[in-house]
Image 1: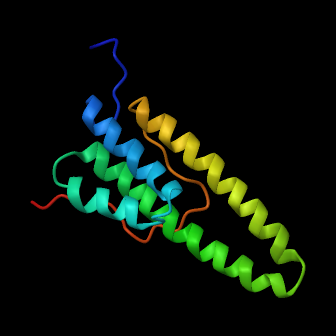
Image 2: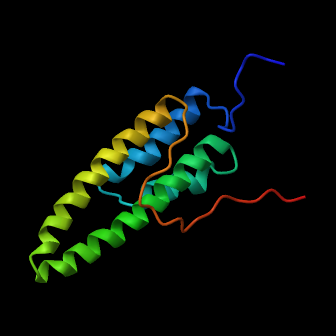
Length: 124
């Protein structure tokens, strides 16, 4: 027996961590879900760590876009303004948390995210 706890988090070197952080932070530079999508498409075969983080970031960005569109539509009634601001703050905070977790080599799952892209299943 070992004293080390077992973990199902994929190993992450510094390059993988940098790509994972980029997947979480690229939406801030105005590329929206395209940033995580590009990272996921480029790196998904090379690094399970980057694949997991980029997939999670992509799912969140797609969900976030849907939530913002619904909030914008609800601006016809006053509650949409509050939802829009609240969702924006929520998105900012969870992207920071996700980037920090990725930089530390840890797993992170965004809350309130619709999982459009599921993990690939190993083929036998």
